[in-house]
View: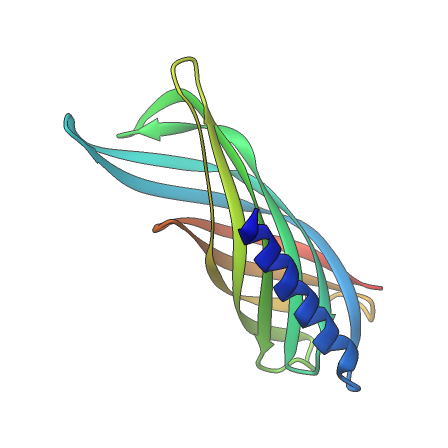
Length: 184
């Protein structure tokens, strides 16, 4: 709970900075999807196991342009329920989860039809594994980073292609996807 409070406080700080800036371009929202993958090595007394998750995820976001180069965004990502594999063998052990984060983006040529960016943020995440013999929930607050490009469709719509890597207590969830962005 205290991690969520930290993210909300940081979000309010970034939004208040945006309102204080006189060179504001606007607010936008976006919705999209990604392929999310995670590969983790687990060592037990019985040996080493490689756990793999590979499923679609869905993202919704709202952003505020602070100036021509810097943007603040709030995002939520939903990792769909999918079975994991252990050492390459599909195991009926469904895993799902979510991530709520705040991030800053830096654009390299923001006034062009094709704008590459880098991002760095903080997210609160939760992963659930449910099975007949096992049911566990993992959660925490960690950083995430990414790179991508926004492309212009028209004056109010853009598309985004991006890669994100989310740290989750030393493991990572990698997301490669696309988002449709609409100016409000």
